[in-house]
Image 1 (cartoon, rainbow, N blue to C red):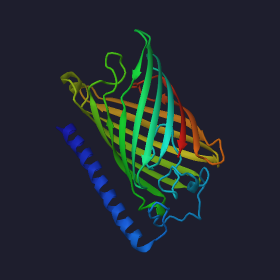
Image 2: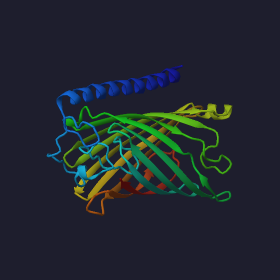
Image 3: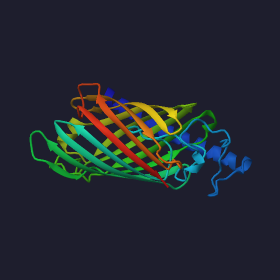
Image 4: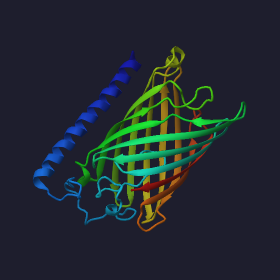
Length: 302
């Protein structure tokens, strides 16, 4: 009963946050429509963002056509997800030592329809070579994500976002790659904050599995995923970061995995439209998905 109440409280809190942020953003946009006529050429009001006072960040945010709001340019962590709506392609590679060898290639495409709203699609392809068993490969679980951000507090260097991830059963249970029948809904809340050369991003998501077998329902009631990224601009083209993240699975036997992921990101070209990152992930708990992982990413903004 206590677990059910806690689960209901988490869902209610996230839904209330979504309503509050949406209402505040609507009020703020309505205020901008009457009091501020500085638009970005696509009819979107910039509100109270001052573009002539750039903070320490990789390049000029206004040069990133892929950013839905030219006045905000939060850098990308490697593991923790950004709250900023963007138009971009992202390519991820992960090598993991998990009772064998696992390689995962992932393509992400995100399109910002407005400065507040974007849709993202993620398609992974996984190669597994377990210590015991045959090597397999195939599609993992695809993800469709909807993200809504508010710019009501950018004058305080704060950017919140809420959204929903839908995890689709495009995997293969027999191969041990994803699932071919479980659909998972994951409402999430993300928050970005910047101060001088430092950037902070926090994220929390609640995974709700659907269409489970009775055995799977006993094993997992729901999952709580969370993460915090701290990034420091070493130079205008180089960032150092450390990320703390984890996931807790609540069910017949609760499991709690926690990881640390140090890394670096950099922008190799003058227009800053390409972002490259590399890092490692190390488990800090006995509950873990792997013993270590190597993460690489490349992001192209449009």
